[in-house]
Image (cartoon, rainbow, N blue to C red; front, side, top):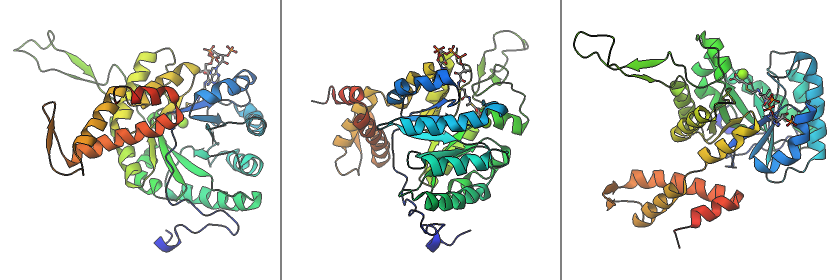
Length: 352
Ligand SMILES: CC(C)(COP(=O)(O)OP(=O)(O)OC[C@H]1O[C@@H](n2cnc3c(N)ncnc32)[C@H](O)[C@@H]1OP(=O)(O)O)[C@@H](O)C(=O)NCCC(=O)NCCSC(=O)C[C@H](O)C(=O)O
Ligand SMILES: [Mg+2]
């Protein structure tokens, strides 16, 4: 473990200084695409302005014999595209794979100036982040980069969950974390066969009435991911980095996707992945606070003055703790309004 004094020193001569605070940039949807797939690549100019983050995926979902094409495609697309305010991320292959090292070597030296964040899959502990941290510093120095590339860890192994706090604080590069429910389910030997979402068998049942165990008993499906998302959110908040729900694999089921995303939003996540264009607007809707909530938050903030004491608004008690929650909503709304003119108008309405 580096000493606190060394934590913000560059890890290679000539590498840029690490950031001291992770900048909050809207990242409601991290849109995955396969850069080696010509049809998807052709959609990049249309999709880029509609998403907060565009992610060129090189890992799972890319066939082994298409890895090189995906990597080359990402280099080509990044060089040819002006992404405007949209962030460009990539998910590299895992550190134990035959491709992970070449992904990092190629991408940082070829398009490091365009890459905001590198997502590292299957992170098991701080040692994985330390490895990437040093390597990135060396490559940034070699490429003459002026700002550090940030790192996003995928929480998708049982050991990764056990070490989630140390991963979150492993490097000043740590930008955030996403839940990878499919790999995590396999790693935990869960008996599901899905990518995120619930399961009809994971439920609680109301008590029996009298001796009859079979009739009149309601069941309620439970959230398989609540525990992990909550742990991840706490670890991220404690270390000043951003938590995200990951993928929802049932593309057709836009309703359950929205529910899963909303649970994550309410628990503290700032975004989720979109795997298909149909999920982009779901994430935008869910991870942008509703205008009524923003108006309410501003009303509470205004009524609370210096933020201390207690007041009643519409029959509800407000105090120091509610005003802090309201500031979270209002600050998120301000950040999103700066990026999204439609939201800016919706958040303004009713306040004049
Ligand atoms: C899931 C898909 C394979 C579905 O693709 P397809 O069958 O082509 O769907 P459609 O026919 O409905 O597509 C309509 C058109 O839209 C284009 N398309 C589809 N997806 C995308 C996209 N993500 N970005 C841009 N464009 C897209 C299609 O090409 C069609 O175009 P056209 O024919 O010209 O009209 C596909 O959506 C897909 O591959 N999505 C990404 C999957 C992915 O990245 N998976 C990995 C992330 S999840 C994961 O890794 C698990 C995680 O790590 C964990 O452990 O939990
Ligand atoms: Mg995975």
